[in-house]
Length: 193
Image 1 (cartoon, rainbow, N blue to C red):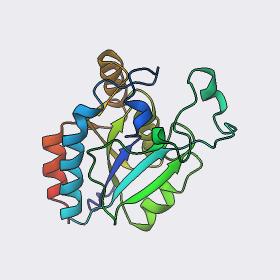
Image 2 (spheres, one colour; image 1 turned 90 degrees about the vertical axis):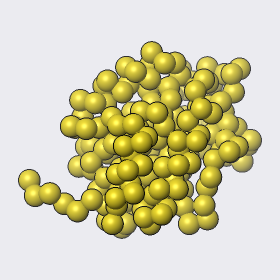
Image 3 (spheres, rainbow, N blue to C red; image 1 turned 120 degrees about the vertical axis):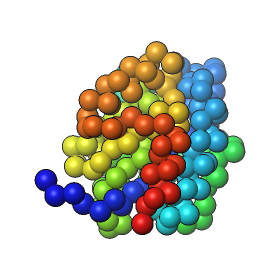
Image 4 (tube, rainbow, N blue to C red; image 1 turned 45 degrees about the vertical axis):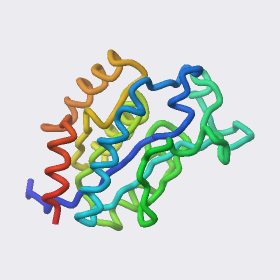
């Protein structure tokens, strides 16, 4: 297979208030800890004019779009509520993109693939929460669409450290070099042209 030019995008998945509330089953204990790494990756991406794409989960107030997720998850990330808002401390820029999703994967029934192809991106750096849920589903769907996938291990978090490590192990089997650290990801993004 011919090597294509490196054209990256940074995807930031579900960094929303409902996932940092310790009173819910959706709580990701390390979510706030990964904010500095995400902000640094976003800075590096923007410096190279690589797109930064916020993938946010939003559900309708009528709760008609939860699907099977309703079997295991409480109502969360309802449009227009504080729970659906981004966590304080994240550095979102005006030129960043937003993709709204209703299910786990950032690709399912969204325009993410269209956006990435319009931007000619072929390498996706995934960050955010939960590594054992929406990040993993997005990584699998990205792989199925022939993107190069890079999951930034210390810029993602799961619902527990055990779940996070298991998800990283599972995603590492998608492609060579899938799981990388933030320092490596920042260097790779800085080398983008």
